[in-house]
Length: 169
Image (cartoon, rainbow, N blue to C red; front, side, top):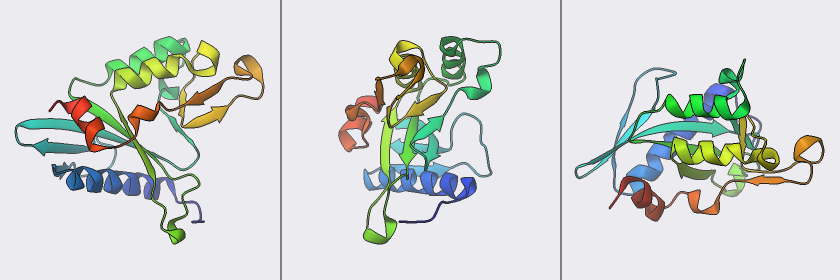
């Protein structure tokens, strides 16, 4: 197994891997220069179709997306605030490095979803109580979510078909 990466290494790796996959799918890729770009990190263009891509990397099984918006808000309100920060034509690439054995040839798992899809899914987290962290796969062993498993929808898995669903043919 690879040792833990720094948060910077996770970000760079996730963005690079996403760019590679979109290029492999036939898209021209433009990368925004500089750290912490607003709303999106990459632009993918295929013929006349353009999509903005916000890349989120993780090596712990989850992506903290809405915790900065939780103060004085319910989970649902924080999620809605996060969704509303995105404009149309933006998708999110979720890259997961947890349990990826790089030395053995494994590659990270990548999922694609709209902010709206992610938000609606996050509202069902913890048995419908919501959460600030989107989990790839997590069984709640105690608390209000006890016995509930949060899991990324299988159809979000990166594929050319999934890109076409999100961008249109």
